[in-house]
Image (cartoon, rainbow, N blue to C red; front, side):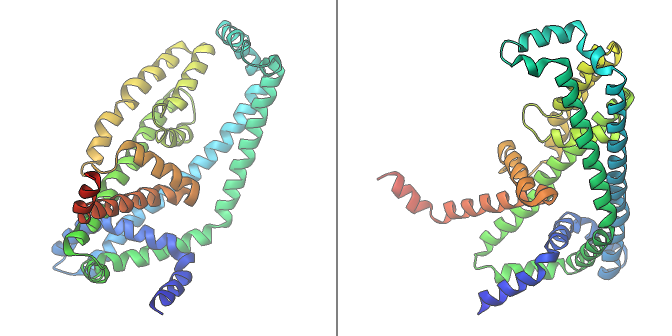
Length: 345
């Protein structure tokens, strides 16, 4: 009966699962700040939780919505400019460059001739620009059409966040009491979830945002839509080995071929020295305490999360992997003698 009741509750809250989980994650990351506010406000948890929710709204939610709207606008504008550039003969100028001719000659050995014809390349670029433009228009229409849904979801998230922050200690005590685990196991599980939400999650997302911001700034200086390509860089930074070079390297090559040698060299140097070094300095700073989540695990948790859950998968994926890893660790600890005996037989 208990399992049936729990399942019924799950079905009831399923439509609101995203704002609930988002509120819990924000709550985990904001507990220290909320505790500090509570002390400063004369031990007033209600007022502290309200102020924390206001901070989330004006520092994260509203700016994020504005950035998304600007990205869509820049994407639409850029696809229009790209089509105009192709129509004015820009693609023919690039394809007639000696470097491009050499590359085409090398590719002709392994690719069919028709793929390398100028008309075919021009058609493909026009098709990509047209489809991208339609996609951005569709996304913008969808965003405007679902603005009410977005507002409702955010209000629900803030509503839940208020209670998560105000009653954090009670919620943790309830979870500890309900879990059929020893205190040490409960501590390990809760500590791991908090560590991932504060470090691995922040390390991945904030590093991506930092690389996107710095890379987008360089793209803007070089004459590209900075916000749009910065966002593309943020997503590309999640790809191992290649990373942001997937964006800035083709842009630099295009500038070199188009005659903007200075800006092309600038993008290459900026991408290698500035954007590339962020992984070595910023990511370790954000990811302190996330030792059990290595780069490969984080990458596949993000990739799988995006595929299964969409954008929210950037949050769900690492948490699911982290909980799984800590449960494996608990199993290994509790069954150590049995496992050692099995290894020795």
